[in-house]
Image (cartoon, rainbow, N blue to C red; front, top):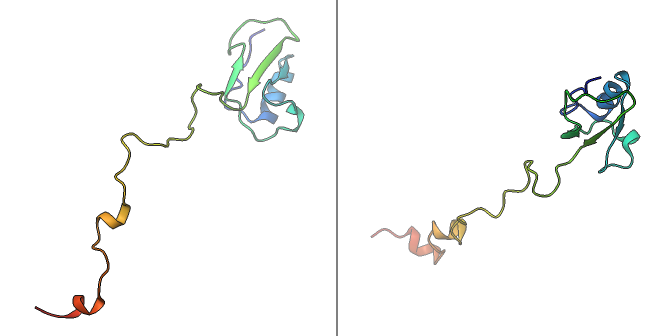
Amino acid sequence: MRVPRLVGLMAVDARETARRQGLLLTTPDRPELPLAVVDHVVRQYPRPGAEVPRDSMVYVWFDFGPGEGGGGVHEPRVPRPPRGGLQRELDEPGDPSVALSSP
């Protein structure tokens, strides 16, 4: 039998798809797989289309591991933005009466 594509499916749908194909589903990053419902599968092994015997184990992951991609945090940015923020753009506040007087 061929392994179905589970990547992109919610956990509940991945479990049902594997069950219908006669495969067992497990996950190394979620010991509570039966409780996972709306998490999406991001990786699987064996890959979709691989030939395996009935009752084979298919491993799925719901989170990317370190260094494996994903959106992640994009900070700090390189090159770093200039320090000072708005203070660089605006004059320092001074005596308000000076700003109101005309030359």
